[in-house]
Length: 373
Image (cartoon, rainbow, N blue to C red; front, side):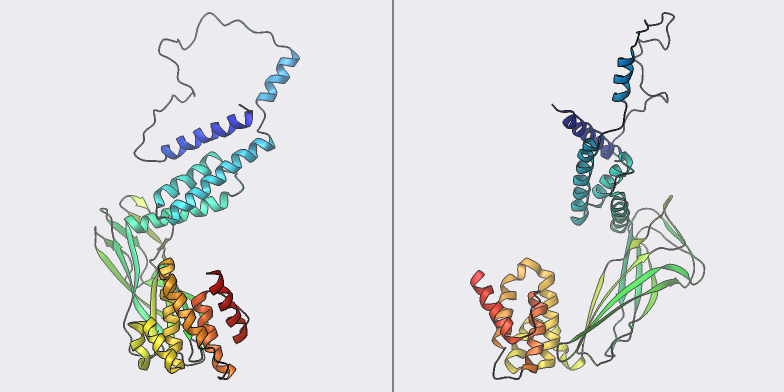
């Protein structure tokens, strides 16, 4: 077996031990501070010194070469192995196995702190630890309050902080001190299908100062978000709210909370009052609106339907194809091209494909798409 293979197998073994060692369920025997442990039958010292081997200059040179650092080729083997482990950690993170992702990232940083992608490993470890806290100890969610006004210019709601653990949580903050940061994205749709978007962030203040949560207790904090909305009257507003919980100081039991914990993402849709019936079944509402070529209803239902199809992914392939067929059928040469703009915008939103914004381009694309399908 080549030396490179020995290097790879050696690092694989070290890495496996490091990941296991980070588990609280696995205990390893500790060795004396001096390094290797001695068998009990072997004395610590002996009056009889072992014979001294005479060395030559050739032996010295050979010994020195064994203790040198790894070659470039060997480093590449190790780096490639660790890169595979980082990708494995990312896969665990995407699958919701946050504890495994955290352990793998931590092992990479422990055995190779100078690896070239250490920044990515640190970021993944931090994200995995924060998500693990949110899943097991600290529930965080923004709940919007209902509003009769449209469009919404200031979104009000409450950040719900829930203790999911069996430990007491303490949050230390001054009156009106920072509790974290809220972030929002606003997407507005207008009657002709054109869109406008913006985003922003605001500090969340702890209005009553410090508080504590016993197991499964809940704390609510009022939040008002200035959405800085667009210049026209929309038919649909899509709002996404997220944030980070990061007070001045917080403890879970005896553990200090050292990193920001993300909130659950909250998605809100607000439709113009005269079109609110489209929310119940946007797919059917879009089909009916296409028959009547009711442009405001097409815009509101179409973008709601596009979002629903995206969320359902592969489960909605047939419905997506049927919707595309109906939209392309509406590209009528008898109708003025201005009327095609809304249909083309809906095609882009539902298909996820960007084409030149012309009727002919989309008709050709649809024909090719049907042949390939």
